[in-house]
Length: 426
Image (cartoon, rainbow, N blue to C red):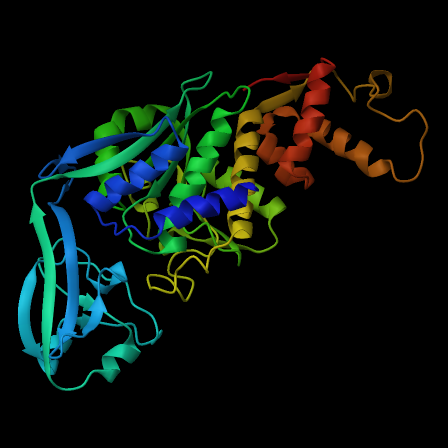
């Protein structure tokens, strides 16, 4: 079974769960993820906790919801599709006419067959979601609106995996676990993050400490930053938000606020050399947890990695974002990008050649003893690497200058270091 197939299977297991900012669905999600990541720890932050300018909200629990007509036929049913109810809806048990019903119905006219995903986390209301076509088919009459839900003093759940390295400097990966049944927008991020964490744990050794954070979008990242602020500021050298990483259409990255961090440089380099279809987005296009980590005063160097980025694909935030939209091949591509990123980060440093003029490569077996057609490019790759190994460039810089992927430069770097003519200087 390929890595892409394994990740797809995790996402499929997560897909049916009715998640929200808080509650049973999030905890059930973590129970599934724990099966695949033994070191995943889950923490709770109580309702009412102040986290910077925000307050952890009440916990939401929903047991059932539907709309039925006068004959008892259910028009929509939460148990058939959990997108049918507005997230954080308050309870209701009322009969109304069609005009009254439509005040509480949400659709997406641009996708008339799809059920939209709608929430109201911080203002008390209730609502139902259905396709535009279904709404237009409703006849005048009486309708029963029913939602069995409650809001109560509970807690917000978040998960964390910390993989200690040889040094305390950290690489941070974040993703979110708050959307209900949407495959690319929700299930893909946690599934790929778990696979990447397992990959790192299976490495023979690694320099950096790796931190993986799973939480509800926005309030979860605000809460996590608030409770870990000093540590993150002191230790995180690069951060990557994983969102919408399961389809196979394009690759995308959303830059940090000024697009000038180590995280920007690293991810852009990997994507530039290992993907055929890359779309770069400015921080002005932000919309996920990168907003909180890049906020003024926080300034954690975070970029977002996606396939088709949130808001930019037609199925986004609707029932069309299902398991048919994502694929093992899409997951495999995301996983390969991220493992190449980790490998590059682990090997990255500032290098300096320690002999004057060009070193004699031939006596070290690095230069062919017979010159012939076809060998020039390989030799130039080595000599170009040497030319820019002056202590001012790291691997990503050299890669960008000479036009060679970092993974190919790693091989050259290793050979030069084994021969004692290259030093790490930073």
